[in-house]
Length: 255
Image (cartoon, rainbow, N blue to C red):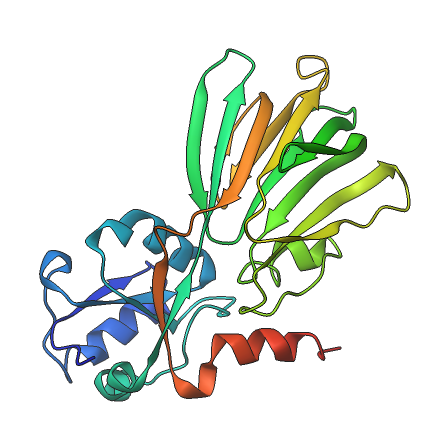
């Protein structure tokens, strides 16, 4: 596809602002609502914000690395931006749909590109019942929390919690405990991407837990349902020397 109308969405970082100043010398910039491609300039965290806040425009995103971590970003010089965008390949990232019910009975729904994570909110460990497709797989996990990660998010918080790296095309989700106490030897599970995962917080008032869908947080939850949303993918452009599938595979061999 030929992208003719390009909009820029930079972070406040001086490196991102300098990129914008130089890019404007080499191509014409259009407003976000008129664009057929959005160039997000910053780090991975800023890219997640952009994807969540601007995905309603229904156009692809091209990330430019100008932050701390650039897993979702491309390394591109301002003068090469137009050419690199035209040569880039589209990757569809399927988010997780999180529906949480808090202790007041209020329902909250958010999407997550990387992961949905439950975390304890008190000095006491959380107690969590886990159902997969309506079948109880664990009556009680005692831990600091647990997360469900997409393949794209498997190299982020999931990896730090000792979860597995998942190839982008594997159609799997990672279910990874965070500092498990009981059962002590349980290290998580790999689930088909079609799975519906239901967490019920035991003693939700005495052992409060929060849940986050990427950066979107809900406090004092009593139940959380997580499943993949196949109807609303995020479209992200990657240059051929920064293929996301290959980068995820290479992460498995890094030391």
